[in-house]
Amino acid sequence: MLESSNHSIYEKKSEIVKDYEEVGKSCESSGDYKEAIKFYRKAVDIDPDNELLWHYIGNCYLKLEKYEKAINSLKLAIEINKEELYECFKMI
Image 1: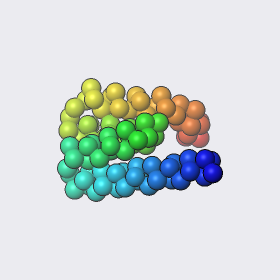
Image 2: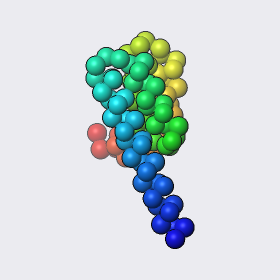
Image 3: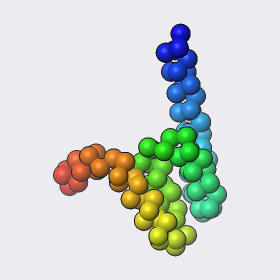
């Protein structure tokens, strides 16, 4: 019973993260980078190990010319998933 409940909670959190991510993408595509960052950060509060969200945040900061924040966010994205990035670069 407890395992089923934990799985359900995980699924719900995953759905919420996806919802925030989608709203963030919508804001970003319309050029509202500050608002996009707000939604990406809400998603990251739930799923802090999601390197893709940190990547999105970093890109928005780049668009806003907030380079130090962009670098910090992009560094986090790299740190979270170094191995996968390394494998991608090996294929280039």
